[in-house]
Amino acid sequence: MSRTNPQKKAKELAKLLRNERPDYHYLKAVFRHLRTELNVSVITKAKSLPDIPTEDELKRYYEIVWTGQNTQDLLIVKTLLYTGARVSELVNIRLTDVDFKRCQIRIESGKGAKDRLVPFPESFKEILSMHVKDMKVSGATHLFESSWKKQYTDRGIRKILQKYATAADFEKTMSPHKLRHFLFTWLKKQGLDDAMIQPYSGHATRQSLEIYSRMSLAVAQEEYDQAIKKFPV
Image (cartoon, rainbow, N blue to C red; front, side):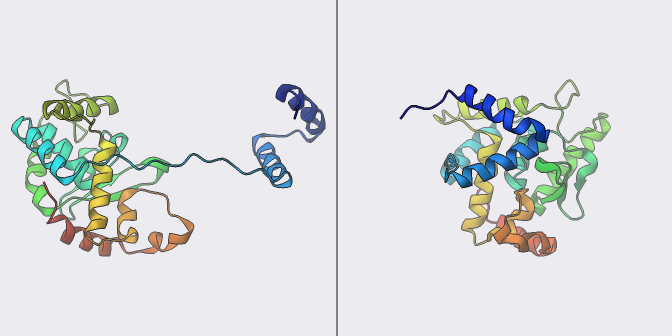
């Protein structure tokens, strides 16, 4: 079957639509209805599952980080693991965002510009508190800064994680995204359902899970506190 050249057909459609003075949203709506009229299905790319490390791999990786004796690197890895923060969120955490009383960190203007609170375990409180005090003394403003007293970049954090993956002779790469998904997958294995995980993950609330947005954060915190005591590292 021969078809008209797409560019030529676009010009023909433009003549029909020009008097409407269309903007982006109008054209989007028109072509959505056009697909319906022509019975054209939208082709969506299937989302691949993230390549999450196993518990044994994570323990081996953490052992390498621990023996590296770089306290800030260790805290970066543990913060990513305990909070599930995205790398873009991690580098923007300020010292004032850490609430030691509630064991929570405020993530400001995360993905989708939605602020949220993420938890960390009581056992992490002491070493994180010492780090925060040291950073304040040095005049830092962010939770993690380079030796040049500059805010880390996404790339800088990724390089730190990969450095230890290489030292551990990992064939796979290690990224903040993998640590984030390890946490949420692990929490699900411990029996926490999506309604408990969603307030911390920052994922958009789906229509079928509207209860997420109304769920008490305190209840989710209790569930997290109980489960994280069994965390592998």
